Image 1 (cartoon, rainbow, N blue to C red):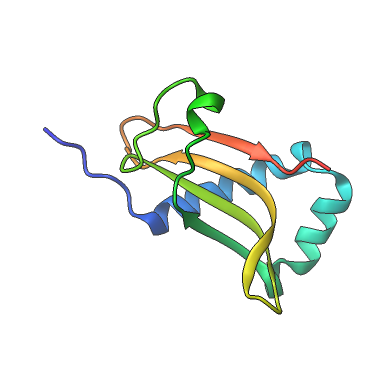
Image 2: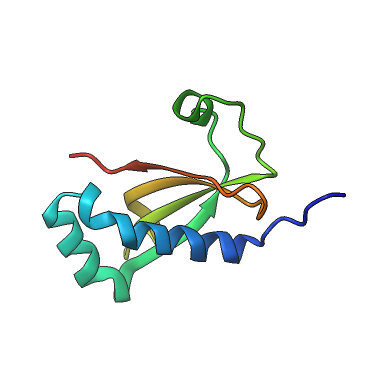
Length: 107
């Protein structure tokens, strides 16, 4: 029996909840303040094409169908591009096998 994968909208929701729980411990205080102050106007969480470097971070070959990469950060108002990334996340879309790995912004 094949497990139905969670939607990309649900992946974004899960990723954002995890990000909020862990941001305080993993980001510089200035970045936490910046994100908190600017999120309403410029904050974004979006699914992007899964990059090839994840296998080196997680130790297994990543299936782009089962896992989604989510970027969380602030959008540049002039270019409308999410260019201030606070976290890159790899999230499993399989509800039977929950998995998340995060790469945090480091100054």
